[in-house]
Length: 353
Image (cartoon, rainbow, N blue to C red; front, side, top):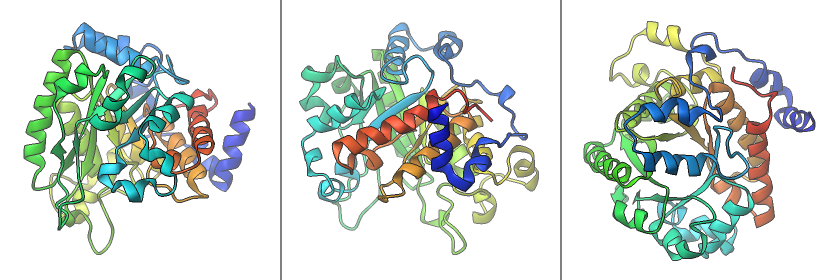
């Protein structure tokens, strides 16, 4: 009860808005919601082989959220995506990749997601202590001018050789390069499954046309929802997606298939309903949706992280994958923030809306 009171205090005047909302468009009874039996209900009926099931079990049953059906993953590939100097100047300790793994372990995360370099350098010391998720492609920003493309940095077999339980990858849906990325990653995921590893897809959208004079629709619920649906189609076991910030992307940009009735039938403008649409596009929650934590803004990080966790959980999502808000702080503060977020998923008073 003390934890619940603390969460209410952090949400402030928005507490009732987030905690009392009931989804009436897509109801919770229509979803497969996270639980300790999620893997049994979903993947034992699938084409995933026993070794993939074991890998998923290792991930879902590790850390403070172990055996709850929820995930708390620490992702750190910002040294490539945003340049190492920019990413780590707030806390230079993280230039040493071992500290990334130590943070995930101390915080009781289900797993740590990072690069071939970070995880490979520390594999023999830590791979048996916390599940490794190797991010196999990246958007490197040293090419000038920046091209915003996802490039493979290594082979799936190398991730398996180091003992990883899963591979992660990004596809920039909507970009000119998306078809190539889709081909590359669908083949990589098939190989990962054959080797017994789980798969996590960063289902991001990228196209200059998605940002209009009116608003940026890269995180629109309908557009990101469709990206999620493409992700589960190539058999991602877990989907990573940004929390939706708006809706009507297809309508306002003027592409794809849409009509007013689909918006009226499936969602409202409430943040939990928007996230519920993302969950619905993950086969009604059968494939877990984990939302990203976003960048670090300083003092507002804790409230933003708690809000994201509450929205994700109440929408039927499966957890958070939070990096910058944690590692761009002193070690102890990062651990504290991750623990606080995990408490949202452990708090029984916060239920699926």
